Image (tube, rainbow, N blue to C red; front, side, top):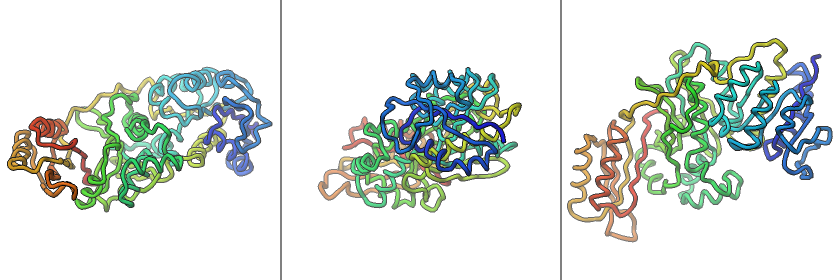
Length: 437
């Protein structure tokens, strides 16, 4: 049997402790599957005395993760610190430069520095594995890197944040407000004390940027993503979507167009009969559309200690199965130096159209003014519905518009015009509609 694979874990929070526990509890199974033992030989965290529910007494303790990354006592450096700078970046870079394999769950780090780190890994002939960085326990990275040879990806999209999906699911099922759902998500540990990163779309954007690079062979461009969160989604939107035969999901979408690559994160109305609409709670789902395979949908647990630990351990096992002299594949599907510069797609018509909710003063001429603003921007309407905004007042009405195919720019210009006309009593709501998915 080959020598044991020695693992160093940096960061012993929920995920790090779960990884150590799985490596201990599943040691015999991993040995049979990998043909060698996998042992935790070193650990690093901020508090050496904290009880993490797993015995780490046999592992060497390091206060400094960078020193652990450089030590000859490990073969694999597992980074679970988090953050795109500081100790996380310094330790991963040090490990790669020292010729150590790296496993990370850090999507923020990869979104900002992934290409540079990939160049070091490929130069040193070591692996940089990151399955846990996108969609938790769903093996989407392995699928795209290894199982789709010959396929040309045209679009990749999905539900990539469990917190947002949990909130939207609860809002629809129980008819409660966004704020109430968020508080419950925080109480249950699905959302952080400061939930901005999740609910405003940043987490989804980081994950989408990594998938975009894998799908289209471009450099990661997390800063070139159109992004909206879900904090402005109301019960009025949830109910209107249901009446129209749709369900609201926060989607990350990347697709190839004639003018470049389009990346966007925003609330989206999807048909209630579609597969993506059936993904509820903290579950994630990723759809990949290709020329040969067609559409592949992967769905499963997207977050949490066990789901993320499963992906991390899977990455460690892949390293354990490799042998000296084995030629490792590129980190992002193509060699890092061959990744093309990201070219942002030009604005184009959205085939699914838009849902527009306007709360307006109930007075003569408002309806005609709205229709004129739409016509002035060449927006064709599929439907228009007017009803009372609520039982508390007769002084305002809610107008629901559904457009045919049109551009984002045209919709925003029309809505801005309606706002300037002084007809609105509340902020307008605009949500894209996906006809399929």
